[in-house]
Image 1 (tube, rainbow, N blue to C red):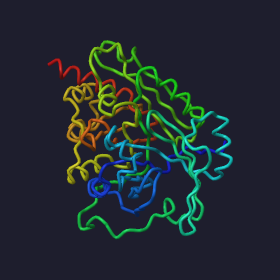
Image 2 (tube, rainbow, N blue to C red; image 1 turned 60 degrees about the horizontal axis):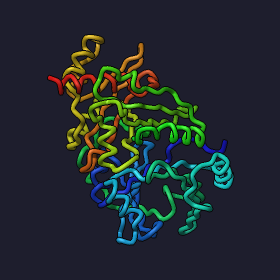
Image 3 (spheres, rainbow, N blue to C red; image 1 turned 60 degrees about the vertical axis):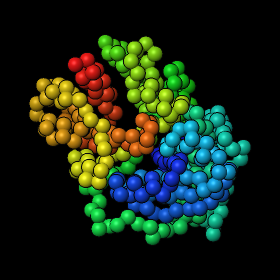
Length: 361
């Protein structure tokens, strides 16, 4: 297999790249590594390259109305993830492999870009409604892609950066319409040689008026994890999954999860910079205290942290409020203590139960 599943970068299409880039710098501590003005698929565009730990984000906006691929995407979906990229060593071999695996190819041949001796080749494959998977080979690239120039537009370093460290991308979570998950699961499993770790659905959320079906996929090396969820039509009330589809106007990547080394410290630093996190119902912590009185419940509650336990292993999770105006794209920060390998399935169930209990008084 020529494809080594690991996310190289994630690209987000936005309306105002400078503002969104600045927010990631100031609020989350990303470093602005460079920017590139270029002619994209349809017209001129500007891309900011941001980096934090091993995580690379590209923030792209249109510079003219003719860049309809960006303009129409943002009009339809708002500020949202367009694609994720996987770096490869032999693009010709990968091209043949993807054809054999029946990937949905968006370019009939490899797209080459060369600027000042830096060169890259790209294979674009379809994902969901308007998303893409990009397979990229870089040749003599000093920066993330050809054409990126270092910039002096840096956030004031007199302002303290958030505490703790963001390490890497932990997983991507996507939302699809009912009865589409199996198709996209099989598609990603085939392309990346993933394994479906587990699925939860109607039985898992039995007795609740909301719920979802969730599929967890992972690579053998553990460096590529994908979560795909779809609504449960049998449920009488809408969940966050239904809300995403409604406001995103279709399928898409709902959130990025970042792995960190000290979640409490990270949250403290982010809150100082104005980052808002999803409030967790009081009942969640009441139930958690009954089951695990040894945990620092008040500290978890103050930081809106969800906690799942597996013996001596712990999973800590926190979710930001949507980063744009629509209730769609948000970020998750996750800490895995003693190599916890799950994705907080029980946390999700308990959260659904707590929300329902809160709504019902």
